[in-house]
Amino acid sequence: MDLRHNQLSGPIPPQLGNLQNLQTLSLFGNRMSGQIPPQLARLTYLQALELGRNQLSGSIPPQLAQLPCLRGLNLTVNQLSGPIPPQLGNFSNNLDFLDLSDNQLSGQIPPELSNISDLKWLELDGNQLSGPLPLELSRFANLTVLNLSQNPLSGQIPPWLGNLSSLEALSLVDNQLTGRIPPELGNLSNLKYLNLYDNQLTGRIPPELGNLSNLQSLNLHDNQLSGSIPFRLGNLLNLQVLQLEYNQLNGRIPPELGSLSKLERLDLHFNQLSGRIPPELGNLSNLQYLILFDNQLSGPIPSQLGALSNLVWLRINENQLKGQIPPELGNLSMLEWLLLNQNQLEGSIPSQLGELSNLEWLVLGDNQLSGQIPPELGNLSSLTTLYLSNNQLNGQIPSELGNLSKLKYLFLSRNGLTGCIPEGLRSIETNDLARLELDFCASDSQPEPEPEPKPEPQPEPQPETGFIAISSGSNHVCALREDGSIACWGANDVGQADPPAGRFTAIRSEANRTCAVRENGAIACWGKFTVES
Image (cartoon, rainbow, N blue to C red):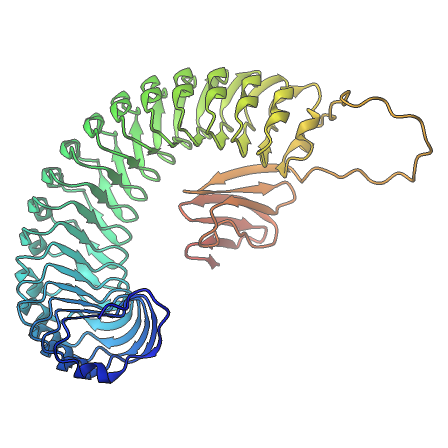
């Protein structure tokens, strides 16, 4: 009986338990409410029970473990509560799929689940399960997927997980796990996805993870990991995602990472990495996101990065980079974000950047750039944000910038610009043009009107208060105005672009949140983990 993805509502009729020959019961993706009828345990020939994505509540009936032929039980995304019945460990060895994720289940993971010896897929994520991982789970010799993310599980990651030789996906995200990453995880030769982020893990990244030749995604970010990045991670030739941001990693970026030819995302931001950006990263032909900001990287920007033809984001801001901006970056035809601010870059802005037709954010402020603003930047038809403040730029503002019809945020102050402001920039939504103390250029595009009586003069609309500081997170930007207020833009899925009212003296953005210091010294944060103290 397949009734998936309809608009059925109300309770599940207990009379369905009378359909003794039923082999499949799927009510997935409806609006069913109430409790799961224990009478379903009468369906002795049932092989698949799919009740996920409804509004079911109450506890999981332990009687379901009496279904002798059941191969798959899916109760994901409901409002089920209470502990996981230990009786589920009595399922016959036919059961190979168990998904109880995204409910309100509490208590510890029952060790009895390990009795389901043929289980291949176990998802308990998105609940309120607590305590350590039970040792008995080490018996899951056939398990391929283990997802225990988004629970308050505690304790250390047990080394015995390295014995689950069939495992292809291990996710322990957003728990309260502490201690070191066991080097035994390097024994999981079939592993494709290793997600351990958003915990309290410490110590070094085990070099043994470089043995995981089938690994496609390695996410260890938002922990307290220290030490250097193991060069053996350069052996992960199938890796597509490497995210180590928000740790305490130090040392150099291993040039061996340039061997990861399938890599699409490399995110190492908010660590303590030093030394030069390896030019070998220019070999990553499939790379789409290179995010290295908020480290202590030094030296020049490698011109080889201009060969990354699929790059969408290049964020190497808030480092100690020196030298000139390589004109080769103008070859990055797919680029949408180019953030090089808060470094020590010098020289002129390459005119070749005007060839980046997909560019939306160009943020070069807080450097030592000199010369004139290239008029070619007026060709950036997709540009929404242009931040060139706090450099040593001189000369006139190119009139071509007035052609940027999508431009919403413009910051040019704290330079040596002269002349007048192009009339086309007058309507920019958020800007610091008032701080330039320059007049708008006279417009000669319209014929001189005939003299006629003038009405009473009205006050001229004033540009928005200028900005004195700007800071960017993963996908949003916040700026501090001269009057102490704050403006934010970009993604706002967790409120990171929705600042509080008041007057502030300093600002700092990171990931999906921003924090700012109020005039009275209190700190306000908004976005993920909103606080005020």
